[in-house]
Length: 203
Image 1: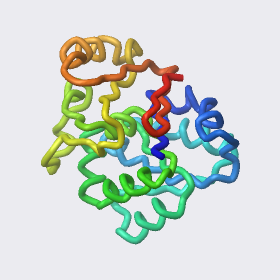
Image 2 (image 1 turned 180 degrees about the vertical axis):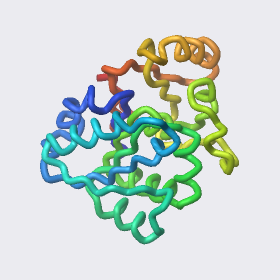
Image 3 (image 1 turned 120 degrees about the horizontal axis):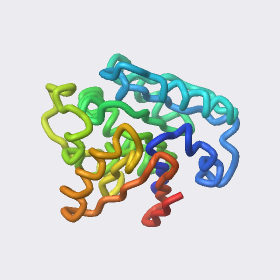
């Protein structure tokens, strides 16, 4: 059964993780993928997510898929207990997931029931397509990305940061432009979407 926790801000919603997992995350090892943040100017939210996991007793296994070798990627994704993808540039993230082969491994692991936690870009990339987000994230960060087709772990498009600064205006524009095209779930920074199999819950 697929299990995904999709957030705008993991640090703001980390208290939902035990309920999502139906138990304590203490002593769980997290495949911690900060790749989306590489094109960004600040990594504050990445460090906040790292602290949130460690405060709950999790072990962090850093996995930078843009530079890691295939065996390291395979081992982390197959052996660690949880998969976490940070926020940042969604197009760059998808480019590196596809280029490194991590995309297929993540699909396989999630299909087998491994919990996936996605924050902002890490949440958006789980959907069927990420093209709708180009008003928020510049595609220029991913010059080698051939397709905007996402990981397809869920059948809806996740719009993060709804009405949350500094994205309040652009999220409304995206929702107005694309909201009726295909299923879209929009959440603010204090909400999260839990997916268990075919069941979706906004927390």
